[in-house]
Amino acid sequence: MLVASCARPLTPEERAFAASVQGPTLDTARVRIHDRNLVSRIVRMRPPRPQTTCRERIYPREIGPQPSSTAAFVLFERMFVAGDLYAENFLPAWPEAMSLPFAMIFAHEMTHVWQWQNRAVTGYHPALAAQEHAPGTDPYLYDLAPGKGFLDYSFEQQGGLVEEFVCCRALDPDAPRTQALHDLLRPQFPGLARRSPVPPDAIKLPQDAPDPRGICSK
Image 1 (cartoon, rainbow, N blue to C red):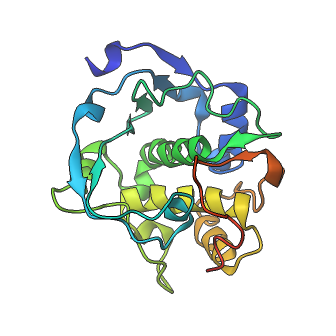
Image 2 (spheres, rainbow, N blue to C red):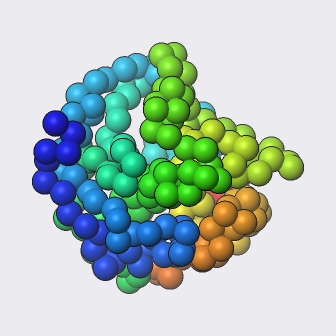
């Protein structure tokens, strides 16, 4: 049932964006994106997330328990996307313009494909990643710890770190945290671009996003 939905290959723009993140360590030709995600119907409540990373700071502060569902997930080299989030091209104007939320979720999910394609190094398997989603936990939260390597983080945390770097390099490229994220990711992603080519005024933020100035410097 999971693979019965329509699937498409990555667009040239999506492949170019992925090349600026995962670089040659990701074989984008093998990736397929599906326009259906049945697990998105499962909704759980989670505590509000602290605004400690760029990922949370581009949205208004959360107050009280929040409904949470899986908008997208990866099974080996296939990305399944909920219908209301699915796009025929997540980065249609790259590198001249981009939707930052779309770029971030795409980078996160491509990290899971990368984890599978490089499983000899990462130890990844979808079943292991699924175990991180235990009831009452939030597998996406993390702290940058001195001396901790990228592969020392959990699988979902690795996706979150890549997601945050995409956010920081777009909105606050000169911030110390942006550099720290780049230093953390670069050993695994040798093609990782330090800066986004998209002009600041061509980056689409979420509706009601707070002022992004200095977002990764706080």
